[in-house]
Image (cartoon, rainbow, N blue to C red):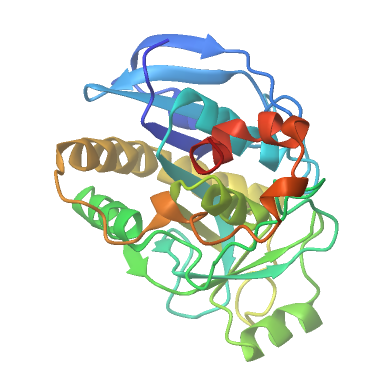
Length: 290
């Protein structure tokens, strides 16, 4: 399979686009199990792009059950450098209305039962995630959404809850008091793992509801989420295609440093790291441990 530079993690509908050609699937194994589904790889505006349906074919994984590590590792194995996450979310702000798209710049992890790192088992790395999303990719993605006719907001803090239940009104009001902008169930640990894998990662967050805090709106339901996501699907597909085209055409070196995120992260004495650990993580750390 030819090298793949771009990856997209989201709903299975994303890769059912007329522009996608030369489609093939990759059934990959990783040290962290199999990804959510075989990876669909196709050509989009001259670039090979890999798609993973986050919740599996038919949406069979809960947010907690999604094999996040396997998904990111599989994209790394394919040679991916840029990952676009596409997610449904609730809005905790009046101005981020249902139907709008947000490119957040901050992340608050409120999950409790997930594996958040590739590291452990004899190799410790403390990754910097002060700014958890790639600002370069985020800006390209925001411009693409705007140019495709979507209503886009740039910035905001995305809180990830465990799920699969929706919030109580009390929780929703507290999250607003904390200054959160959006609420969802899958962006953590996906963003953190992408940083550990030295990938450029940003999220296209589709606002489907006002969670349960808004006095004049009905509380969020599955029906509400699906309706908005279906309505926004064409915009999401067009924005992904345009972002891929523009990233491929760019010759500027990104100033974000995502591609070197591990350079100063390792703390374990090299003498005690086992060959087995290095072999398992070689796609991630190989260039640092010759």
